[in-house]
Length: 357
Image 1 (cartoon, rainbow, N blue to C red):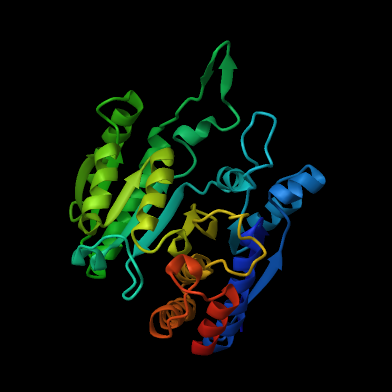
Image 2: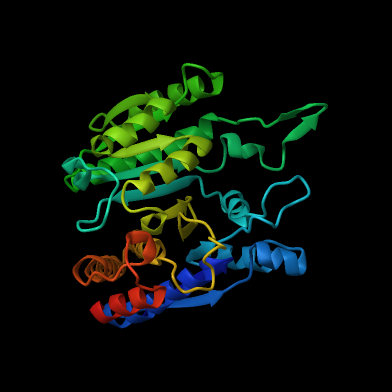
């Protein structure tokens, strides 16, 4: 039986609960696909920092480097901060350490689940935001400075960093086009104001020339925020700088049921990390009411990535089985957590998904 090693970092708050949920579902799907995914839990996060002074122990980072993939819950607590006033969020350290330059945030409408848009075309939302994750304004983390009565954070946009994430988005659009989707990339920037963003756009235009079959367009980030609220069904693949992507990925999650339905992946050339896009939600941690769907969908994304990386179609079959079982639990059986207007618990969702596997 083929075996894959998965480093598991549950983290803080509801990260622990949704990770436990995902692992229970992973155990249920393994016999169906005749694959073994060996999961090893490693410490990291804000609570670990409080206890030990280390948010991301070297042993945990080494384990992530050795693993076939990383399954990540959520990390950070509002009251746990570094000396500069910022939160302890080691997921950012992992992105830089493993060179996870492409933040992939897919959202799609689930028939039967509540959405905030009344327009019937909202049922057609199926888009992916690709966020550059190692540069942009986030490059300033740990490098910011305060001089007198002013603070400075510097944005970094390089040809190499921008080029590779644009290539990733263009290749993804071509793949989606082959699957019957539009296959269009919308470059999101602020090239009318910032030199860095004008440079970003010039690199995107250059890279897009290698993909003549992929339609491309440019939209300023403020206009994109408006368009995503008014007509999100128009878009297929978005590519943008780190900070803009951080903001817009939360916006698009709200269109399809909220952060509880928003999976994500942070991908590089050699490593992949998969996590729900939501945070640690300390206000509901320990109550058993967190929606595990985003984590379950992130698990499916992990299986898809491993399937492509290792040419193992059985893992992709497992991903489809998980998605189908979750759809059956939420839509057909109506097992929904509070954020989706129901009264179901985390355990209720897990049980309903396992039954369908």
